[in-house]
Structures are given as C-alpha cells and as structure tokens.
Image (cartoon, rainbow over all chains, first blue to last red; front, side, top):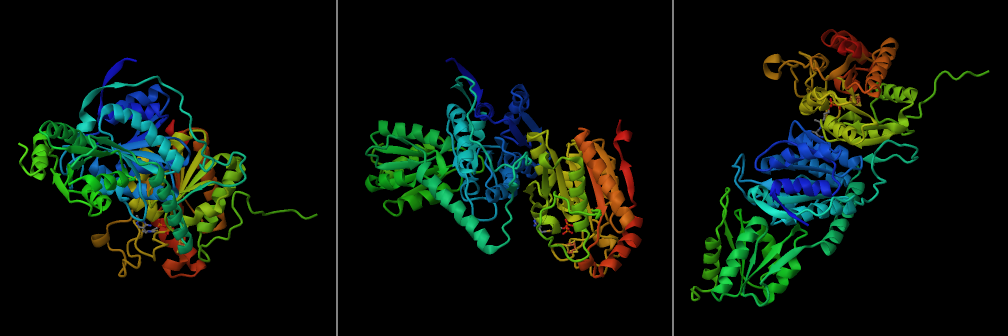
Length: 354
Length: 249
Ligand SMILES: Cc1ncc(C[n+]2csc(CCOP(=O)(O)OP(=O)(O)O)c2C)c(N)n1
Ligand code: SF4
C-alpha cells in the first residue's frame, strides 16, 4: 500500500469517514479548522452530511439529534468551543447517546491563544459538564495513530452507548506525516434498536431523554452508568510502554508531550540513565495498573504535560506513594523541548551522569 | 343509533396531562396530535419536547420522541432531520425556551430553512419555574421577577417572534393563532396542519405561534385567563398568517 502525506486534522476527518461516520456538525475554531474544511469537501463525496452550525452549543445539540436517530456522528472543536459543548455532552451522557467529539486543545484559560496545549485534561477526563459521568478519552500521538484510532473511537461509542473524546493539540492537528490509509471498506455497525426514528410499525415508542424526575430513578441511572464505566475501565485501557524494562526514572506523558519525552528518554539512555516512558493512550480509563507496577522498581516518576499539571494527579493516585512523582510542565501554548525534559531527567538522576 | 362525535386521538397516550386546570397546553397538544393523525404520518414522525411546562410532552405523544436541553430543540431537530430526511420532525417549545435561551437556535434553523415544523406556545410567562418574566411578557405585566410590572427601561420590550421570523427568507410558513375560544381553536388546528403540510411538501421551515394561557402564574381563573389573553395579548400579538408557501414561490 502506498503512503500519503496528511495533516493531523485531515487525518481525523478521513479516519472518521473510514469508520462509517457520515454526519458532521461543527463551528470553526483554530487550530482544528482544517478538519471541517476537509469534511466540507469529503462528506458530499461519500454521500454524507456536513453542516456548519451557528455555535458549538448548536453543533453538539445537532449531534444529540443525529446520535438519537441512530447514525454515526462527530463534532470537533478546540478548548473555548469545548467549554460551550459541555451542556450537550452532559445531556448525551444522561441519554446514553454514542458520538465522537474531537478536541484539538489550545492555550487557555479564556480566549487564551491558538498555540498547542494540554490544559483541558480535567474537562476531558473528569466529566466536564454537570452531573456524574465520564467520557472515554483517546489521546493519539501521531497522524497514523489518528487514522487507526477513529475506527476504535466510533466502535467504543456504539458498543457502550457512550461519548468518546479524541483529545489532540495544535501540534498534532497541524503536523504532516506519511500515513497508510488502507482500503475503503464498508463498516459493520451495531444495530441501534433504541434509536428514535419514527415508529415505523414498532409498537413500543423510543424516547431519547435525560430527564429522571424521581430521585430513585435518577440514582438508578447514575448507578447503571457507573457500572458501565467500571466495565469500560476493566476492558478498554490502552497505553504504550517505551524502554520501561528496569527503568529507574519513569516518565508519563501523552500526545505531543509523549513524543518529546520519547526523544528525551532515548538521549538519557544514551547517557547511561535508565529512563523509560509510559504513554497513556486512553486518558480515561486511565492505565493505572502499569504505573503501579512500574512504581515498584522505579526510583522516580516524572510527569510531563503541556499544562500546569492535571494528569499528574492521576499519576500520583496510580503510584499511590510507592515512589516520588515529579512534574514538569509548560503552559499557555508553550511546548517543552527535548533538552528541557532531559535536564529534568538528569536532575532526578542526581546530576552525576553528565 | 349512537353517533360518535368526539374521540381521543391515538396519537396521544393514555397518560393524564400534568398541566394545571385551565391551562391551554393540553388543547394545543391535542391539536398537534389530531393533525398528525389526520395526515396519517404518526408512524413516520419524530417529536422534540422542550424544557418548560411541556417538558413531559414525550410522555403524551404516542410517537418516537426526544427531550431536548432548554432552548436547543431546533438544533436537535436539525440533527434528526439531517439524519433521517424522510421523517416528519416537529418541535414543541414555550416562549422562554424559544424566544430567550434558544433564540439563536430558532433563528438559524429558520435561516437554513430546516425542513421541520415548530409549535411555539406563547403564554407570556415562564410557567414551570414560577412565573418569571419571559421575553414575551407584556409591558406592565406583573410577574415574579417584574413585581412592579414589566418596564421597558429595565426589562426591554416584548419580542414578536412571528414577525421577526417572517422576515427570514428561510421561513416558508409563519402564523400566529390563539386557543382562547372554539372558533380560534379550529383556526389554530388549520394553521398547524398547514405547517405540517409545508414540511410534507418538502418546502422548508414552518412555525405556528399559539397564544396560550397560564392561569396559575397570571393569578387568574381559567375563564378570566382566556379573557385576559384575548384582551391583552392579541392586541400586542396580532393573529394571522405572516408568511405562507404561496407567498414564498
Ligand atoms: C439551561 C437551563 N436554564 C434554566 C432552566 C430552568 N427552566 C426550566 S423551564 C424554564 C422556563 C420555561 O418557560 P417557557 O419556555 O415559557 O415554558 P412554559 O413553562 O411557560 O410552558 C426555565 C428557565 C433549565 N432547565 N435549563
Ligand atoms: S404553570 Fe402555567 S403554563 Fe404551566 S401548566 Fe400551569 S397553567 Fe400551564
């Protein structure tokens, strides 16, 4: 198969189409706009629907309507837009509607800037809107991984009737890499007998709803959701290990930060420091076990993020005091360099390896 | 021989309405259901309920239904209709829902001429949350958040949504009706049918604004409320067809 050169944002779009998604609703925001540009052209070619909504509030509610009528549907945005979508995402959690939401993160808070960031981790992994709920959050680190991950995202959404967020950042969205697309295939999709599509001879009505006015019933919904989340946590954790065997200094990073850390680990190893990396691919469910395991033999953990430190809280919970967890982060759209991270590793190694 | 002169339509479930005595939400539900029945589209129709007193509309319509977030019904209906273009889709929304929190959604659905039908229930107040001012509350009208009466300096002017939406190229049918007496109930039904016909004929966005009573929050008896509607609401919200498909083409 020949390879093609693709931008990360475009790969999200092509990956979604190859995953059988034919409905996209969105509102422009940098640094993800190449994705709607791509789909505006590509959706009509495959008989799909591309609609530019009047706001992110509307986009996500269009997604609610489409998901409830049983189709594979996606929206995408960047940080300030994601804040606006939280209302709809919470309603979708309550109504158990499957969809894929892409967040190509930028610097914040507020209008922030359009530079890459990872400071929406809390919003992505802790629910984000009102009420008790969680999203499956996938964090790709390369353009090829994006392509392959989109199919996974839609399958997980349908399988668990849940919302799946693909969490990237401005670097991933903008970078170009060669990718293998493979053949365009018809996607097998799960039937959705619960969808509200008009009765069409069905005797039982289908209702898409998140209103549970009786507290007992609302609690029951919450318990049902959390039983489902427990099943997801048991079955769907994904991560990548790099040079982890006998690592004394274990780095934890995802997405773009993980690519930088990989290079830093390589350099550290060349300098005789036993460094290794755990890259969570699912941010929720968080791959805690691999961290707990690594913490038994590691001397130090180092979490690297493009934020003031959000994932580090989950790493500390996973390590549970077995060894110290340090943090290095840049924020506001600043990207850490390999040298920055290497310096942090060397500090932890005691500075005697230089 | 016994002749049946009135029968409950099968498009309504047997669940008793929760509406206050004398509230006209119930009449409007029945009109929508009868129209769907008479057009023979029940098997192919999807409804979207609002947030407001009609929040349980999904329990009453014997159809596949969605419950939308406050004001977002037009966006939800857009998502449904764009996914299932051969279904008949309608939203049922109050004035707080449609003319306040969801103004952007309704205006843009009309601008895009989304092919669904909106039933807009204007009772000049927020019923469900305790009688607060709505965008449609009349000047001088007392509500729980305008205890001295709505004052244009403080609270702005009431919005005439039908007139506003009728200016939009994408709206193909816009009418305002009332349900304060039998004659107007019949006219309201006719307008609701027109609005569904516009969708069945694939023409575009159609909306019927129905002036409705809220005896509970207006502090009036059901009969006084209907009289208040006629004497106070109709002069500010004139009835009529603001736009019809004939005008459009
Ligand atoms: C986001 C959000 N804000 C506020 C509310 C509270 N709320 C529920 S109903 C309502 C007003 C509804 O009024 P209207 O649409 O006029 O319908 P009515 O009750 O008069 O039929 C409000 C403000 C809510 N449910 N969601
Ligand atoms: S509060 Fe008003 S609008 Fe709501 S059900 Fe009662 S009378 Fe009707």
